[in-house]
Image (cartoon, rainbow, N blue to C red; front, side):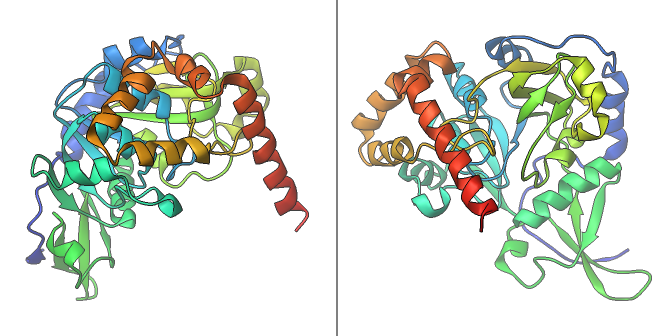
Length: 332
């Protein structure tokens, strides 16, 4: 196929499925315990310079505890998939974890506003940027899951997003119509927060998925954080509820409230007060430096962070709020 047009953006990852297959061929698929502390999982599987992707959707089910730990351990020069990222992006930008970014949705915290720190970092000139749409990044993960170097779509043609992407437009050999080729995306490491997992990595997720099933299958290394561990017998009791199978997973980290201060469907609502506190602190550099020291660098782990910001009483309050919202929705 002849390339008719191509975006001017940089392709940060290798879309070759055969080279990716070489890695996956060497990956163990043994059904063994992968249970470990989150700190150890980040130390073992998240390395400087690699390409990182984060699961969840917006502030829903994002692995915030893992993002804190990545910043706490001082990771640098990573690539990042800014797919549907909100508070996770805010944290990683504050820690200056990445220096190149595939951008679809970043900086914004949805209805909460924009992150001043993330915006300043992205405008600093220290981050190489390639643009995509949310669907483009989902399509790229789908291509990787399918084991093909690209998938054709009919999205982003005629837009500035295409101009600043690394996609290509070709003529379909069957119909003669123009299609956009979205290159496969194989993250070096991804982190997904789930509701339940067993020690082997079989995972259950309730609520919205977006592209996490494809993200799990496209990722070379996968860290799972979970609200709770369940016995393997429970997984076997209802195997169709398993959304991510064990053989894709490298680490399982039991991390209750691991999405806090974001929300976890059917578990707890987002802490809007604390998220406003983040945004307010970011307005002043010295204030935010003290805020980061208090909430991330000065905390030994996510449990200290949760305790610092209301602890169990706050989490009970957020759980009640989440359950009340679902009750109201169910009752119309």
